[in-house]
Amino acid sequence: MKRFFIYHFPALLYAGIILILSSMPRSELPELAILRADKLLHFLEYALFAVLIYRSMADLFKPPRSRYIFWASLAIVMLFAAVDEFYQSYIPGRQSDPIDLAIDIFGAALILILLWIRQKKSITTSES
Image 1: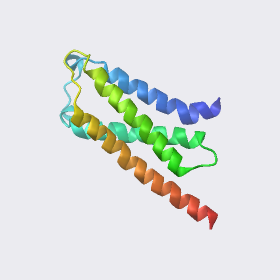
Image 2: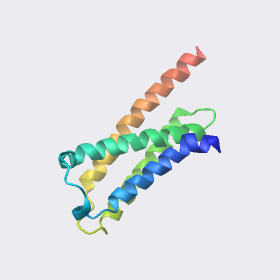
Image 3: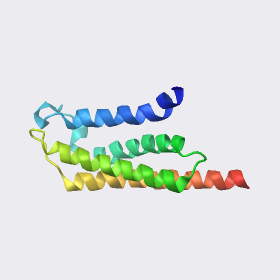
Image 4: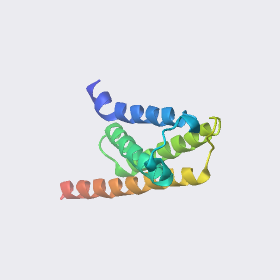
């Protein structure tokens, strides 16, 4: 149970937070200057989500198999991003934006590639 709260719960909690924020009609979102940087927020939001999903997958794949962790993480984040964008099309004042989806996936993929490279280096170093 402790491993669940360390590795998996943060990813599930973060996914819930994303869905809660996606459920807010545009009129209820606060007027913050940072919200004008919408594309940067999408990039960072899904980069962080990718890190949390990667940690979760790394705990599931024992011994660590970086290729499987990478592809499973990418698939989960891409599917979640697509569902999130589709879901937003049903929220008043919000719309589904394919550019947002592309930026979500780009942010996640970039960080996952960096994590994959880091894990491969640590596995190679520990084997030497």
